[in-house]
Length: 229
Ligand SMILES: N[C@@H](CCC(=O)N[C@@H](CS)C(=O)NCC(=O)O)C(=O)O
Image (cartoon, rainbow, N blue to C red):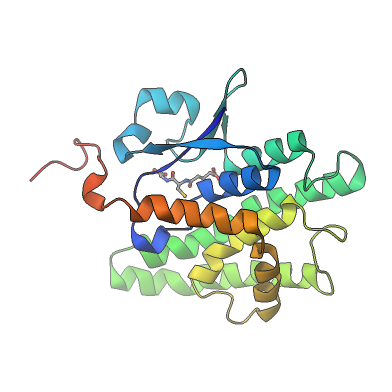
């Protein structure tokens, strides 16, 4: 049996966005059953968890007789390859799909996360205002470059939906949530096309259902960092 890890609870703005939706999505595409191990914040900090996910993050994927996989990109590539879905087995098209999966994670996601950090995690209004223009401009540049690369195309590689599109559409969720796609209508249409899949809808619905069935009070935090009052 396959098990993935997911957060027991996150703030409402993050419901549907947590990266375990990528593992759920590809597993649903493959039609492979899986269980979900719900994590408390303090579990992620434990030695036992770090042995499987060195950075204390979700998701990891565990399967009897196999090494534990971490990094949502690695999980998506591994499942797609083994299930022989959404990625060509070999050749130029496979290499290009892998290039785009890495591009989504390495050349686009970090720029979006810089904006997310300003909007969601910086507390000082003055610091936010000072940093926002530079990070938004850098993110906009990457989104424009992506839009140019997609011009006239339905999918990133070839004429079928692949894991390149799965990962790009997932990364673009961050941009959409931050309202960064308003000047990129073609990226909006592209993302809508990618997300219009039962496997995606089930992934996000399942994640949301879990999160919405818990409250912040259900989540155990590290008592050293969050002392009880
Ligand atoms: N590069 C990792 C990022 C995973 C990640 O950022 N997970 C977040 C939830 S979306 C997390 O576990 N955050 C908790 C933490 O970093 O302490 C991946 O793609 O799997």
